Image (cartoon, rainbow, N blue to C red; front, top):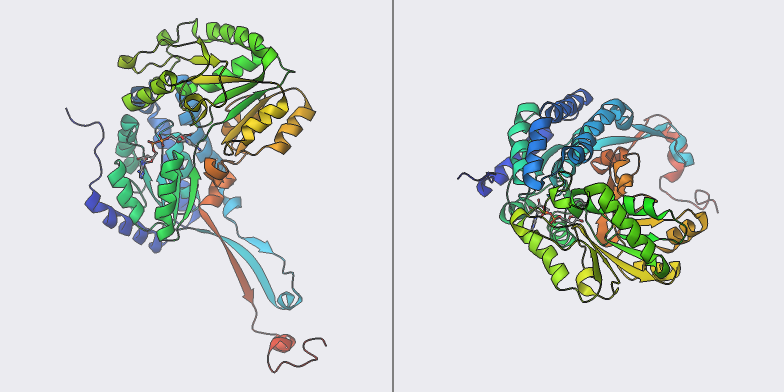
Length: 468
Ligand code: NAD
């Protein structure tokens, strides 16, 4: 049987990079009319082929169309439309009033919005369209040429995008390279002007080291253990609905999924009761049969999640536990009475549908638990109190924060999205995506007239010129 995804031969990668650099140097990607045309074509690619892309996503992850349209298709099409509307304003050079007296004489300052050059975008498997094409929109809008490297794990989606891209966008300027570690390793040896990587922090370090050899800038969209703090003043049914939504979307394979819950000890019974009702409402207690519940991407990731459960040293499974490897089904799983020191549940990011619940005695204890780990990609807080919200915000760090909901901050493209520390470097979405792929080039233009007025800076230096 033919492989779903053809890997790009490693020996053509250097020539591909040279071709795309040549295209950039030719200047064709810079005029705004060209960028807009390509953005419109990317919009058409996704819209015309929506059914085909939904099918590919279903094959890769059994994603339901509701989730795929909301989290894969719409983010790309809406980002294209937003850039088509806002590109003129974004790309316009900024006039800057000189501050210094000498520069006010016969000169003007501007900040040009120049493209970076040839950029590399490396995507991850969990959102194989959004995570590849949303940064790509920013790269096109800013006037760059680009190589896209989809994740090999979401092979059907990568194959579909590879077939479609040259039919819609200019192949002189944009290419897809497919492959696994050897292909990506070779790509990373080559010179790019920016690398935009989404994936796990360990590979993030590899990407950053490779970029350092060329002093190439990087954006790293990584992961981590994103906590959810539940304060005492909540409507528990709303809380469990929203946590289950965020935790079991794409079967928990979401970088911003609530990783674990911190809740006051006396609220645990109410939390369990409400969570059971949520599961009944969402899946009629049969998630395995629900079309709305995705599958784990691969045997390796299923085994990883199974090991998290098998190796746990604490906790009671109050929801879930019935898993089926032959179908890559992993049940929504909630575990209470988890010990914060339990390495299996509380060590690494879970990245799947297992939710450990750790009981605490106070908000302060919850804050201490959060701060004992690396700053997460997102911090979730459920509270109606402004005072508690301010306290948690001012005493913690994280890439982003979402209060009284989950996931939705990532879908709000007016907000920059990214991590901090080990959860990421840099941010994107909307204007920020343009900034990521743009060099703000400071330009001072002076007139040749008025030299006598500037003579005080020329030698010979005198006490008078020094103002002494
Ligand atoms: P993955 O396995 O798809 O890897 C990501 C990319 O890195 C792929 O294109 C892959 O080919 C490449 N890669 C893998 N190993 C490599 C190596 N040794 N050298 C060079 N390239 C290599 O995805 P993953 O890493 O399993 O993704 C899950 C992680 O990504 C989680 O930690 C998650 O939190 C994070 N994530 C972050 C975001 C975000 O926006 N911040 C989004 C999605 C996922």
